[in-house]
Amino acid sequence: MRYFEVFRGPFYYFLFITLIGCASVSRVLNPEKGLYEALLRPLPKWQKEVRRAEKWHEDVIQQYAPTANLAMQKHAENIARRVAAVAKIPVPVKVTVLKGDDLNAFTIGGGFIYIFEGLMNMMNNDDELALVIAHELAHCSAGHVGFWTWYSLRERIRPQGRPSFDVAIREEKYEYKGKRYWEVYLDAPSPEKAVDIIVSYITPIFQRWEEREADILGAYYAYKAGYDLNRGIECFRRIAREEAELRRRALEELQPLYLHLKDAFKDYAQAKKQAIENPFDYYYLLEANTYLKRFLKIKDEYLSCLYKWRDAIFEVPVWFRSHPPISQRVSYLKETLRALERNSINAASTKEVRYVLEVCGLIERGLPFSEKQAR
Image 1 (cartoon, helix red, strand yellow):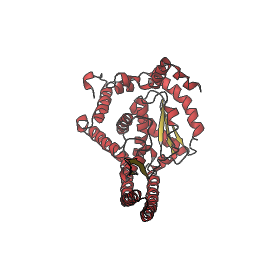
Image 2 (tube, one colour):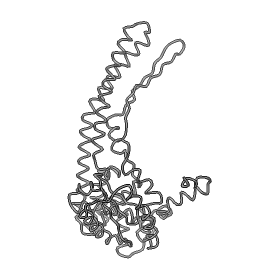
Image 3 (cartoon, one colour):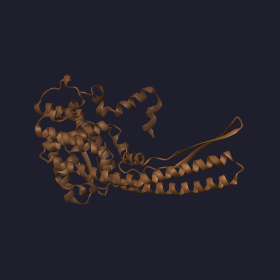
Image 4 (cartoon, one colour):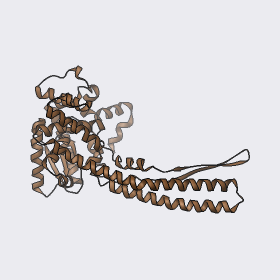
């Protein structure tokens, strides 16, 4: 395992961290000008990214077989070529449709894009598919793909686990000045907390600001390539509605069970307290055991319902779940569309939207970046 020998000393640790961030180091040194510099980086840097991606591509193909549907492959290539022309990516863009029902897409940089057949099939039109492809190309052109990306990404494309939950009674018994005491509390996730955990369970490979940037930049590319951005955003709206409906139904079913669980715990806690304070009265012990059995039955019902909705919510396409909340994405994509239609960044109020579109406008007009144009 020579990869980990770099941790032997401070110098090697520094070298390792430097290599990991090498693709986007300018974003760290000058975050305000970072996107501008990334979009205009010279051809040799792009070629270096391509050589790195070519090596990773072999690993991708070993794990995921390319589609046998040549028409689907050609269709994806045509859209990617049209978007890449607007993005002015100076290297050939290579799109590979992968076999499988996964609702996912990803990039390893250097213009290498991968889309699973499942996600291709769920797109209702070319405008939606163009937005997905443009998003992945935006990661490439914005310099988001770092040294360690593929080795981290391949562990997250198909997550092996799902969140688990526990419901338990935590208790402590002790004596003080000859008197016995008992402290107890219910350890159980509320419906709202549980659903939030389920929705945000998958950790994206890119940071959230990078995902926002790729969304906005990708929307700019798709719009400039002549795709209907409003129709393209519909895939986000569709998934947002699906997620919101699942969340509503989950909370509607879980909330009464949770209240029932808390009531059962309260009854048990009171009965157990009586049993501890009256250790020689067998009636209180029997009553506490009765309430405990009732609590355990309701606990099983609550956990069963939690796992039912966990599996249902996990049917929301992973490409959407592994990014910022869908409702947020819809909001700033709509702002991006409004600003592009009006040809004015003042039509957008979100600072990230204004920043990305301002940088794109400067490059489109061949103007330099001014430090006063900081985010």
